[in-house]
Image (cartoon, rainbow, N blue to C red; front, top):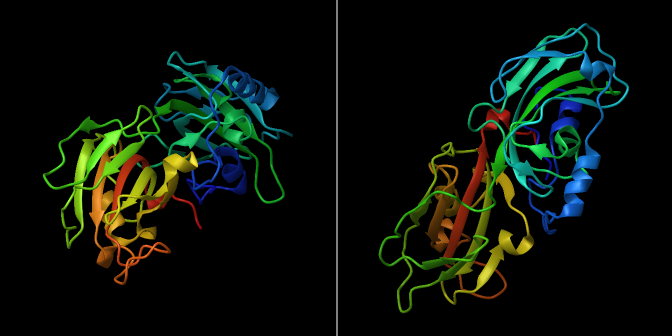
Length: 319
């Protein structure tokens, strides 16, 4: 799934800033290795006359002001590093948070500033095969670059000042909270993958029940937001797992309104960094009916959901 954080900008912006890997995938995320790190360094675009000519004011981590002689007419992507950053080194396969200010290369006017406030960008996965990987390459958190993008058949040339703000874990990092009595038990593997145990002999609830078992301190997810999540779902009737992003190898990101009503309740109002345990009866799941192995009709379902990031509809892609 390719996410477009700001549909108002051009197709160049779409191509430039977004990765595959934020959405659903049946393939595992790249494993950070020495070779992958080297590939990420090799993927970094080179500076050129256009990117070198851009003067930038403002501290890393806050919106920039860029000035340059217009028009700039780069023939290929050019990237000039303004600050290498002094935070942790980033690796291929990691999810990162970033922010940017975009300018028209034709007249120097600012087009947008986005990512410096919570809820404006989803975390994205660094890869040598994506343009975001080419923009940031390898390096450290705190890196700032100028990227000059060439014009295409459908878009003008554009200039971006981008900041690499941090890395984002693929498991919830909030403060642990005790689940209420009667809820399923959750045990976490070293990588954060949950094992869910249904309480023996307990009848399932007749209404959706939600418990926050890790409380994050990030942005609060609103109705319709895109949420980047990990989850595992099991059947109440036998405790068997029927779906898990942990098994598929990568988080997914969709609007909260894409899910069944009970799952939606588990996301909306929660903070980024939280882990949520939700028990969903058929009425707010997949409907009433006879429980069978073919589908989830009639089944009370249980999820553990890790909320890794969120993006408001205003910044979300047109689908």
